[in-house]
Image 1 (cartoon, rainbow, N blue to C red):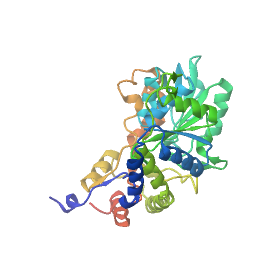
Image 2 (cartoon, helix red, strand yellow):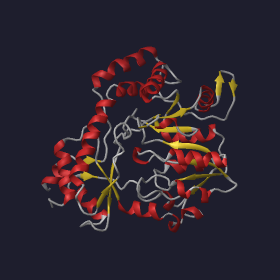
Image 3 (tube, rainbow, N blue to C red):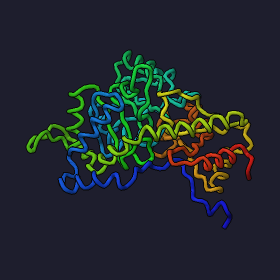
Image 4 (cartoon, rainbow, N blue to C red):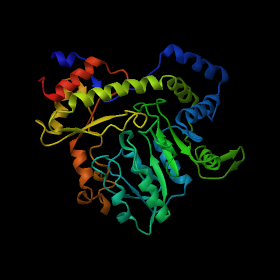
Length: 375
């Protein structure tokens, strides 16, 4: 066994876990109350605490982000075709299929890696009812251009904001844009509840409909108003979220430090490109993707293997494209010639580790391997 193989592996991200002793009082309260789920006190507290922290008015918590996406489409009664990105996690498009909706893939902007607004209008047909963009890696979409197109064609906009916890723009929370924004609180996210998600709602009436849909459509014990699903967040997950929220600013600060070190030390490496820094408050430093271009000494997959051989586990995120998977590749919009920027990015992207517990020595090791100064 080599020395590198004896080292603890370093992954792209690891969940932030507060001290166990601080979680015990929450657990004791759950045990004593015996209120385990069904929108209990911790669920209600977390909804309000997140609204206050994120600067939004209404939020409905969910068991995970995928069920939240499925329910968001139900809540807006979206049908027909929805324009979306091929460059995302598969849950984005899967939520459409689960609702019997046809995804229509549009290429991304090669500089932001978000849905390219300049390509949207050409994809609109009489069957188009909505646009589902993704704030990829937490970097804001061109929300003004997307909304302008949606208004012109009377389309709904649902943002997959799984990566965009805490991201702001000049007007406030990025989550206020569109008809709905959907968050993920999966263990790998900036803010996590082990598993969880949420829909940010523009008004109390929309939140009420979503709350009905996530609880089988129940209004009361004898009244069901919609074919809802079981999407409720448990008290255990909500309690963890309340505790996590106490540490979120500290976690974001450490992510920012790692991001800054990567940028400074990789800026002169030929053939390595990274996204522009979105700036203070706009970014949440959820991921640090690099693009391994032809000028680099190794191919993307060779660098990927080199890092793995040294107990660093980066991720080719997002590769393959959603549009390359069997359930999508037969769609006309999924053809690679229609998606040149997304196709090229998927072949070059490599996300480097970034999370609060990642130490300086580990960051130095990763950078040294990428810069080629170590075998």
